[in-house]
Length: 319
Image 1 (cartoon, helix red, strand yellow):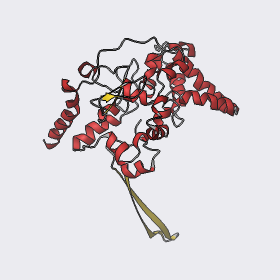
Image 2 (cartoon, one colour):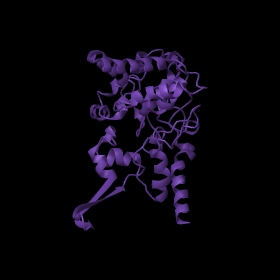
Image 3 (cartoon, helix red, strand yellow):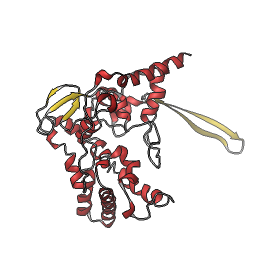
């Protein structure tokens, strides 16, 4: 009964943000822009370089994070996208993909829903261009053409999760209650004017500082809304149904941004400070002599016990 009460309270706290109509920060659904036709055009549409002048430290933190190269990855993500196409899409009988020319934005959404949500604002030609760029990069690396590989890697890295994605496009979750993100507004923790030509307004986003905001990408498991659900990010699910259900109260932002001191770097497994925060390791070793049988005599042995304790608010690892 005690656990059931905790679960009920935890879920109530999570949903309370969007049951109140008083938290609206957005507005009417903006008119759709023409879809971007090239990678260059998509990158320009979501360019956030104008933020650097006033937010240089935050930009430096972000530039060190995986968000700054979400398609390239460690660089494990880009090759995995190609594997998903070659081993998955081209072998699925009803995917409609037999060749790279058959690839559409919809086909890549099993990866880009989180790694590049703005791809929804581009044509299928951009999806095919991304695939061709990654394959060209892989070939250049294999051929030892460093100059070509560097050029193509820069293009891939330009496809990322930047200021415009979190503080505008994805800033408001419950749009019917809180409104849609407005094209002239940057969302954060303040209301007022904003000294920027493209974004002259600031507004508070109801859930930007809550774990549910991160849950949009670091989700609960398979993306069942897709034609071919994929199992990838599961952090928010384990956070919600294990950590908070057992009484945990800190948010993703509390640990990954504030307590860690990483700010917009938000590293996880690449960060020594996050590793220390998330895991306790206890090692105990002892030696002994074991008499196996009279023929072999006494055999020296070592016994080592390693105990790992997960202190994070979610499973380790994710994905």
